[in-house]
Image 1: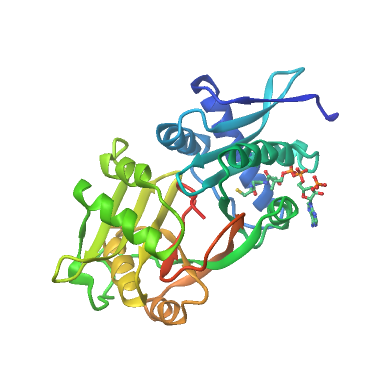
Image 2: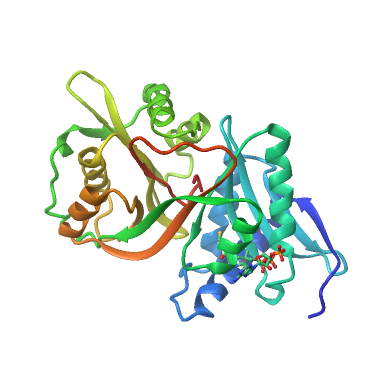
Length: 311
Ligand SMILES: CC(C)(COP(=O)(O)OP(=O)(O)OC[C@H]1O[C@@H](n2cnc3c(N)ncnc32)[C@H](O)[C@@H]1OP(=O)(O)O)[C@@H](O)C(=O)NCCC(=O)NCCS
């Protein structure tokens, strides 16, 4: 295929099927081309989830690269403007067009959106993927945190891992949202009330939000999960310390019997990582939390996710 003449435009609902196919084919081609398992194993019907969730959260925040001659969509990038930052969501280019500068064009569009708002951009990118690392790094993103992607196969009868504080975990209610926002802002510079309200409304019936409170009713952590054929993950989550994070992870896993959701843990949280190994966790990938613009180090445990991408 010759390099096409490309124009950028915003995604509309009529594009969802084509974008879902692109996300599926592009991501799987990249990983399979390097000898890894395909990421999306449930067909392009499952990756429609990205369009559905992201348009529900941030209507009009997906930029497409279109081959002007054929009208074919050959690139897509979602983004999530928040009061503190812009989060960059999943970025995909058609495998036939890798290396043509299409992702760079999409990224420059999102950078322009963030600069107009004078906000940093945050994302999580695979440490195994030098193409995406280089794309972002050359555009001014700096890796600020390293996460290990872990998973624990949860047997049908549940895990026998019951870390201290587990009994203090409960399902969140809308009244918890202001305290979740406050807790997150005290730990790292991210505010995203609309995400928490969206999870709790749970129109798609795929989210679970857990919180951990002490006996005085003070919030020490929260952890969200998504359970869908297109994405089965724990996160986003925030915890004051390793014990709180372990209790939240164990409680969330108890609702995932028969499944193996992936979750991201900061590599410098040695105590938490040790607890997870003892509970049977295995590593499956590494990710960088990258920021373009202002950042400050986390004062607690941050558990990012790819659904929705947070950084
Ligand atoms: C990652 C991906 C989006 C890149 O798309 P692309 O259109 O091929 O990327 P581009 O052609 O715009 O290249 C990006 C930049 O990285 C540079 N680059 C690539 N590999 C590099 C390397 N090893 N060292 C230095 N720079 C490198 C390119 O030169 C280019 O920079 P430039 O424009 O300043 O010259 C594409 O491979 C893809 O869709 N992969 C599957 C899905 C995925 O992994 N998405 C990202 C995670 S969400």
